[in-house]
Structures are given as structure tokens and as C-alpha cells.
Length: 305
Image 1 (cartoon, rainbow, N blue to C red):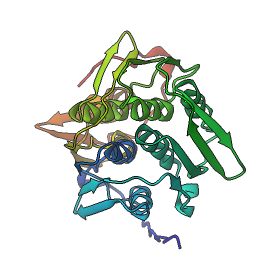
Image 2 (image 1 turned 180 degrees about the vertical axis):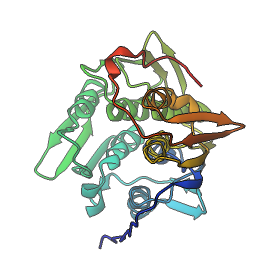
Image 3 (image 1 turned 135 degrees about the vertical axis):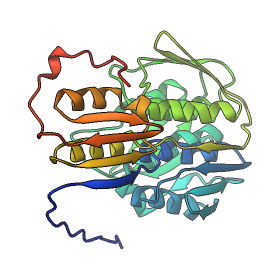
């Protein structure tokens, strides 16, 4: 049964106070799946307490994997992995597709329900499955599940026609046990991917980024590690615009990943929102309301704070 939360919103003339940004869901999901790459203990810090993350942890526990949770820290130890992931929760959770790369990295087959979750446009997993095929697996798609079996693992250069965050992550997970080089051309290099790369390096995988290529040289056995999830740039950006849209508002955003918010801050300032850094806190003030801007005239890659 899915629990629902009712949120009551009342009108306020100003928005003020302190906001504490949580860990990034989009970074936490792949890192949780990366914990399955080793039989040793993995400790993940700054995990957000949200439905998607908790559902993924439930799926993992249903697989017989030990999971301990204390506040925003979880400990995972996957001594054994099952090759059938048929929980109904998989169909409700798009991020469950990261289980494919992590389980296939240690096992030679997998049967999993078709990952579901939020339907933002058409977001098929073709790039994921094609990459698995190129790396030596046979993929059979049925109505509501996918069966993947190893033929013979091969080291190939994977080139994505379009940048895909999810497919980049799945290849990183799978290739972490390939002892010869696997290259990803045209990968996603978003902060969430870099967070996973940092974790995999701690676990013993050699990963280099050269000329917008990711070069992976895995190891047969990954080791356990402790890793902190980055803070959520989407959550922080949402609060910047929300506070800035209300006149006379002033909010203090703690744990804002400022390096990941350069474009958001630049656009906010162009819209008339006051944004500045005070010590390690991001301060946002609503001025005289927001104004229209033309994004095409700005250099969105410029570092401004």
C-alpha cells in the first residue's frame, strides 16, 4: 500500500527563515545500488529520507541483503545476491534500473520486473539495454520483465547517441568488475555521476575522465567504503526561485551545493532575485518580484559565485 501525505498550504505575505538541504535522491539511488558490488560493508551518509529511497531499500532487503538505517546513514552488506528481482515495487520506481548494472557486475544473469516510476516524457531504457548487449549480454524483453544473461563479457567502447545520466551510471556499475578498459563516449558528467565515480574509486575501481570520455578499469573484487552523498541541487534551486518570487522574502539556505548551482544563481540574479553567499550559507532575498529574461543571451557555463 502506498502511503499518501496531505499538505495544507496557507497564504503568506513573505517567506523567511532557515532551510536545510537534504542529500540528493538522484545521487543516493545509484550509490545504494553500488553498495551491492561488494560483499563487504558499505556505509552511506547523508541519505534523504524519502519514499523512492526507502522503496529501493525495501527491494534490497527483500533480496536478503542486510540493511541498517540510523538517521540519514545506512549500512549495506550484500554477501549474497539473488538474480531474480520481481518485487512489485520495481514497477513503481524508475531508479530500480540501477540494480541491473550492479547485480550483473557480480552475477551472470538477471530477471527483473520492468522499472517504472515517474513518467516525465518518453524515457525508455534502450541505451541501457544496448550497452549491456555490447558488453556481452543477451537481453530478452517481455511484457513486464527483462531477462538478461551473459554470453561472454567483452570490453568495448560504449558510445551513446545522446547523453543519458541513467545509462552512464548503469555502464559504470557493470564495468566496475571488468578488468580491461571500458570507455564511455558522450557520457553524462552531471554531479550525480561524479558522486558515484568518487564512490567507485574508493571501492578500488580506476576511473578517469579525459576529453569527455569516461575510462573504466575495474577489479574482480571491490572493497567496502564509507561515502557521503552530495546535497540536492534540484531542491536548493527550487527554494532559490520560490523565495525570490515572493517580495520582501529572505531565506538562509544551508548545505546548498553552490558549485552545482552556478547556472541557477546566474539566471536568478538576471530575474531580479538577490542571491549571495554569507559564510557557508546561501542567502536569497525577494526584491521587487521577478522579471522575464531571455536565456539565449547568457553564458550558462560561467562561474559566478
